Structures are given as C-alpha cells and as structure tokens.
Length: 497
Image (cartoon, rainbow, N blue to C red):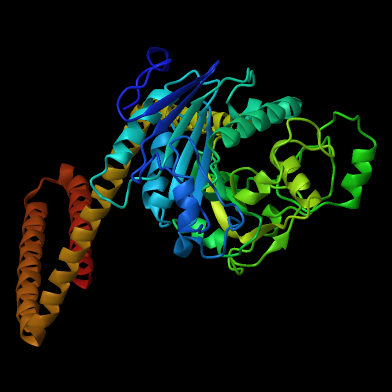
C-alpha cells in the first residue's frame, strides 16, 4: 500500500518502487509478471544474442513489430491505460468498477495515473483502491504494472462545470491539460506497449468490451461517440464531446484570421466553425462499427497505437494549426499520415454534471413548485374562512330545508292514508251502501217526527195565550215555524250532501 509521498522521498519500502523527479513522484506497483526481467523483447532474437546480452543493466527491445493488431488480446499485446486525475475522489469508485469489468485480459493492461492540482483526497483513495485491486483473490482481476505520478501544473481553473467549460478559460486550460497528458505518457510508456488507451475518470457507462471493440478496427487513432444523460425536463440525453469533428472550409478560413497563439474550441458561439461533429451524427439504431474519418478528437476515450506517440505525435501545449491538446493531437496525427477515425454509433456515456444554467433552471422549477404549494395552501385557507363565515346561514338553510321536507312527508302520508281509506270503502261494495241508506232514512223520519211534535206544541201555546199577546204569539209562532222550516231544509241539504 502507498504511504504519503512526503514520507517516501528517496526511499523504497516493500515491493513498490519510487522515483523522485524533483516536484513529481513516480510510483511503480509490482506486476503479477516478473517486474524486472534481464531481457524484454517484442520480437524473437537468437539464443546466441540473448547470451551476449545477459547483462544486469542492459535491456534489449525489438520494436520492429510493435505496431499493434486488430486482435491484440490473442497476440498478448500490452495496453497502457492512462488516466489524468484532478479532484477525482468522488469519481474513483465508479472508475474502478469499470476496471473490474474490463474483458481485455487484465494482466496485459498496465495502468498509469497522473494526480495533479488536487485539493481533495484523490491520491490517498487511489492508493487504497489500487492496493485492493491488486490484492483481489480473483486471479483474473489484478492488472499489470501500475504507475501513479503526482505533478502539479498550476491549473487555476476550478473543477465546477461552469469554470471548466467556460469559453474564457478554454485556451489556457487545454494547454495545461496537454502538458499533463504528455508528462503522464512520457513517464509511463514502455517499449512493451502496443496500444495506449486514454480514459476520463467521469465516464458513467461504457461497454466492458470497449478495448476489443475499438482495437478490432485496427486504426492508428480511434474514438467512440460520447453523450451524456440528462434529466427528463432537459430532454433525457445530449451530445457531450464536441471535440471529435471533421474539418470545414469555414473553420480553415476562420483560422487564417486568428492570431498565431489562438486556439479554436468547439461548441462555442465565439467560433462558428460549421464542422460536422461526430456527436451529432449518432443514430441509436445505427451500425456501431460504422467508421467516420475525423480531424479533431475528444479526450474522453481514445485508443491509439503506441507507434503514433513513438513517431512524435503528442498533445500540443501550444497552438498547433490553431488547436491544442486532444484536438491538436488529432490534427498532428493526420498531418503525419496516421488514420484517425470516429464511431458515430458506438456510444460512451459521460457522467451528467449540472451546469450553472441547469442549476438555475432547477432552482426556478423548485421555486415554481413552492409557489404552487403556497397557492394551494392559501386557497384551502380561503375556502375554510368562507365556510366559517357562512356557517350560521348555511345551518338555517339546512333547517328550513328539513322543515319543508318534513311537511311534504306529512302531506304525503295523509294523502296515502286517505287514498287507503277510500280504497277500503270502495271494496265494501253495494251491501255497505244499502246498510247506509236505511240508517239515513230512519234519521230523517225521526227528524220529521220531532218537527211535527214541535209544531203541535206551538199551536197549542197559541190557543192558550191571552189576546194581548196574540199578535206576539202569532209572530213567535210564525218565526218558530220559519226556523223549523229552515232546519228541515238544512236537514235536506245535509242529506243531499
């Protein structure tokens, strides 16, 4: 396991090797193969030559056949995987999960890391995870030789999305990144390497077979398409790496108008190049093996034959044909007649990091959500208050309604009872009606007899009365008779009714 760099300057502890190169530190993890061999060869040499070269301090390398082939894993071709790191502590677990899943034989892959200008615990976590990786009980997991280099380049640009991708910082930032890549490559590239694979630590999703997939094309420089996922409210996905492109006449004309040290960067309104970008040509259902010749390359995932770098192609830390770093690397490789291609339908997914605009939009969405919640709360409170204000009146309305309903129900009940009584009366038939008529006749007869009795009594009273009262008696008799006649008439009316 690695310890703090300051405690290891000029020392060698355990099986790891440390080289002090001024302000940088170079660690070499032990390989599962023999780290120190008397003779390392890529080609075969005669046994007599081997005997002559068996000197402890002499290494012999035959690079005549180190170009790399389309099926390098079958030919035991070694791959140097380079990963520049800066404040990458949060990305390392994801990065190492990809390493574990690589299908290219791990013992044929050497790892090289450059930790620069970091303020977090990238170096400490990296050392721990490398130790765990190399001590994995699965014999297929440990990788070959592992190098960790620490070197600062005075990178002042912050690692947040806005700073890293802001237009103003691009030229200086990319020149420093080019220096970092060149330092890492020059320190880690060995004569035994046939391929060099550059990989960013913040790749979220990539095929486990990516080394074999890219190598199978047998190109000098090859890159996949790089997109990134987005939240649904931003469209779901988006092209990420716009540094892989074909040259255009517009861009060439633009370059002629710029200063000697100017650096053209893609994806910014300040430089309208109208170049065909690899990212925008992606078809999710297209052939992943389809190739497209390009001039500039992005640095997220690059596979190149080691001979490209040995021939002098590098990442320019200056303006090369008005480009720097990976785009300048692509330009330089094309200038030296190496093949440079991209795969528009073979996609690697970069980690989504919200930009300042994204964060601002998310804040606006959150504010809108809160406003809706407040409006709903106010509406509920308002309705509650209205209900309380009209509660008494509402109660009286309810009482009146119930009273009206009660009266209506009573009337219905009386009507039903009356209808039932009438129906029962009708069901009794003619016999009941006949019984009713004699009773009414007897009542009429009794009334007539009573009337006649009263009339006779009146007449008798008249006869017995004195003469002085005769007129009066006659008048009374007449009045009584009239009254009796009225009663008889009333009786008749009642009977008729």
